Image 1 (spheres, rainbow, N blue to C red):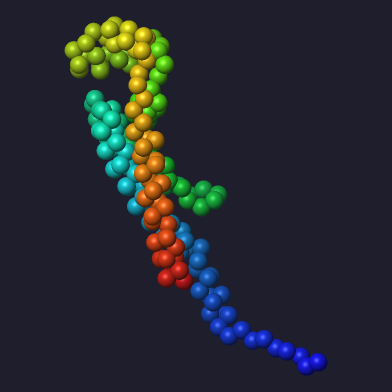
Image 2 (tube, rainbow, N blue to C red; image 1 turned 120 degrees about the vertical axis):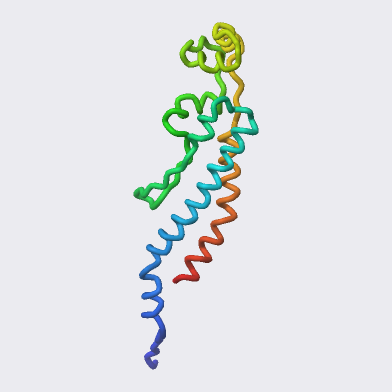
Length: 160
């Protein structure tokens, strides 16, 4: 039986084009994350307004994103700043009835002309309603991301 030889032409060129794949994925991935994160911040701000979780605009103005490198690649976090973070979860999830601290409510009560004791009493009896601005935002961001991933893949392949 005669020896058969298979020759692959262009293999060196293919290897060379994949040599920069990691940097392309990182560059286009960071761009995708930035675009989706900016969208997410804007959506969260809109959703905070739409559920009425606005008093001093501190929560709306405090929403930001941060892109970090990690062991898997890169990730983005959309979150409130440290000041707004102290109460953001309570706005999102609501609370069961409890006696809220006077200091946490005094500014709100004063701005709305309601004695702070009455606000404390209402929260002690009813708790607070969940506002679900973040849950809604993350659903919207997932839809946006799912739409953008094919574009990301196309860009990486085009640049290979």
